[in-house]
Image (cartoon, rainbow, N blue to C red):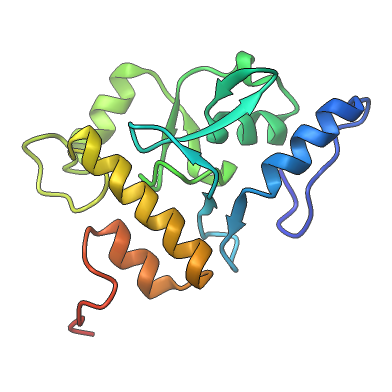
Length: 165
């Protein structure tokens, strides 16, 4: 597993690979506890997921991070699922191997389908997912890690909306 405090350099990695890893980690903000998300604060596509450019191609940052964690190429990974349901999360502990069917079962279980009532990212129109991801990224860059603000954005609420507790 990737160390919480420092990036891991893969033995035998070329200077170009090491440079790509440094560039990748410069665009990740890790929560203060191991169970927190690691949020991608780089480029965000119109589907709300991050984009990392590697060798002239766009790569999903969560796939790249899991590949680093497992010592694989990001091309070797199967379809992945976010356990935390935050499209910008790259924490390998929040990612699981899945397929289309398991993703759909997970979506229904968490009430994230178009007819579901979940407040998280899934079930939102594509533009709303992208807007929420950009709001999360921009807030983290402006204010740093703040559990209350992050929770509010992930729930689709204003960061200044009063809470009951």
